[in-house]
Length: 348
Ligand code: DAH
Image (cartoon, rainbow, N blue to C red):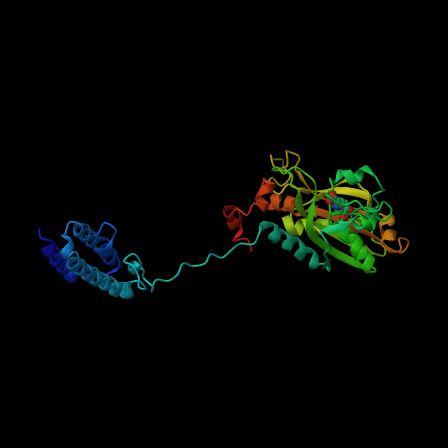
């Protein structure tokens, strides 16, 4: 076919091509102006045109190309800022996807419930720092220097200190009993306070142990406080939290900051004390440590131990949560797995 004919055929094709949307626009570009397109192949044919006619034909092909380019540009102006056919399936009147309402973390639920129970009988809530000095975490709580009890708690030490002033040695607190000391240093009795917070211990992480967990500490200081007051307070707590049929028992124990000291068991919430695999067939579940505040601790914090006495207790929030919600792996609490967390939506 004559080159001239090809040129006029192509001109005709460009003129009659319809570009109705973005896809057609792209198809047009590839067909006529692409690197293997029709205009390009005309330039290839130009090579075989005799020299004297090259100028004339070159001009004609340039005109065709300009025509195609103009048509493409018009389409670009029309379609480049509009929706593609995939987009045109969008129904902008459809309602958006509803945001899912989150759930409170089980540890927060249980912590709040514990605090509420003690607030009802006049306890305040107090908090202290997680980075604590040796004085508040150990020394003022009657842990003798270099006593193995300090190792018992697998402390994460931060600074070594100068060896003389216990306030110069810093660590992550190993228990919330440190807040007792801070409250007693700044408040004179009567004191009734509960102190929730995170604590740290250098433990390998497993289903049963973690390097951080949470406790609630309780402190009650007044004149003539007895062990009977302690026992009745903890029975009240157990029945509010675990149900009115709950009973408690106390076993003698040892803590440097209380004398006498005890560990507290609550009757198994699953089998009501009859014996099951949760309570290992004992009928009892351990829930906290407690005792009468040692006079040395009162004196270290500036409280007259001849005038005042008191009791203290401390419980692990993970442990209580485990008993309430049957969570058997401690790691679940800090993994942020939405499948675990969303199970607590209906709780409160
Ligand atoms: N601080 C103890 C612990 O972390 C728990 C504890 C025991 C706190 C007896 C107390 C107490 O206040 O009287 O294991």
